[in-house]
Length: 288
Image (tube, rainbow, N blue to C red):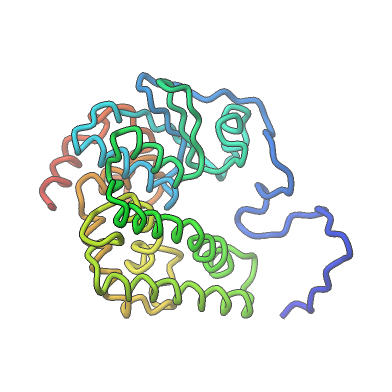
């Protein structure tokens, strides 16, 4: 066990802090190199990776297309965050925070960053798609969307980091963030015991945003921590996860910009609906 840490009066960045992402972490913003972003043929240009935050947006785009919004055709370019693509000058111009996903709408000349902002932008652009217009349901949708944005960092950057990515295991932060992750799962489980979707009977952007984070967790797909978190007790969350994740558009969206897992589940870049090969398309349709 390491000796207790005594913080200095003024913290200085003098060495890497260890862990899988150490070489990319730094206490300053801005580009590290010049790199223009590619631009495809569609108005919507997405620069992303299939992390939970990235999946939110590709699911939304595929759901829009499935609902008949042909203007939602998009180019999805792969940003390899492990190689520092998010610090290229072109990416930083769209998202000064250097986080995926980031989107540029060439039709409206609008940059959009932060995953929830992208979901909201797309919903409004396409006539409040997956965003109810009645005040009560719309507010409940936004309640859960903002809940997710505030809660997920404790699951990912908190629990996920210290459980799976820190250079060594530390009891206090793992206990602290495990307690919070399980509390959040219990919040969801209690709510979903009485509601089909997060906003009630309606599938919304709140479900698209939350499922890649908490749904994957209860399915045992995150951080190899299913047994540790005893995810089997969250039966209502799992029921909702299966309902959402088995939607054909969700399955397609979860493949886009994915570079890990079985090869048949990966689509590194997406520029046209035909990029989903025939075999995969048939499989997706046959399972629902």
